[in-house]
Length: 349
Image 1: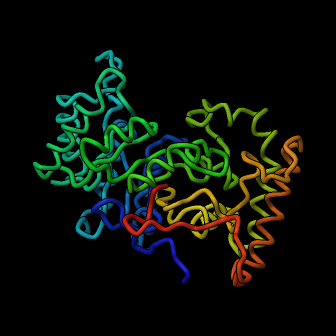
Image 2: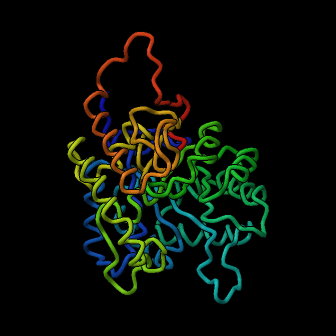
């Protein structure tokens, strides 16, 4: 059965569109943003059937939540809103950049509710782990906010598997959000398996490599990507040709635009849905996914091959997949790749 980016999938107690909308870039993060265009973009996303919108109090120092409030007026009941706290907006004066204390959390959620002009945030994340506050204490207060009706589900962002297990022991975690894309795959080692085991939805952010895998590069001086090592001129020159090569090949083999190639292949094989990137149920054994030989080569692959030739090997496998993915397996065959769908949650990104 074919799937689309707007098919509903479970995310903890919530039902969200398979692909969501991450709002951070609408608040000057990747250069100057135009409010009229941002609102038009959000309207178009709703028209296309996306109902899952992700923001945070620190995006634009509150501007992002206020912008989203304008976009959701009159249709709040149809949408799932996620926000985050823990990156302090007043870090210069407070002397604390990350804060997961209960007293700060209560202030943060009330401020977000006012900016969003809502009485309830569907999914509320701890944005980054506070090293000075035990995760059990933070999650305990999130549970109290849920009991008070201020939030609907508890989420975490960018924590490791150990912290995730400790938090889940206090209260079921609905979603874990971490960066995941074709060039950022560290979560595949421990975090995705832990999320899958615990039945926690995985929400991938920056699934297109902060735009790089869709052909976008920083053009303005105030673009935050200018601070990332991967967006330095030498790094871009080293990876751009290989990335374009792979995405163009995926475009040819899957009838997708380069902008959608990674998301589409993830949705069909590696994961089960992108939201603000991807919300998949994933088991790292699949034959019909893009080969992971760039990080974990097949037994007969040559580890010493240069990067461009390894990209080429992955491209050839993607093309072969497009020709054979609908054929039945031979009787008695043991496929090297397997797609796993967890009945409890269509995620575990």
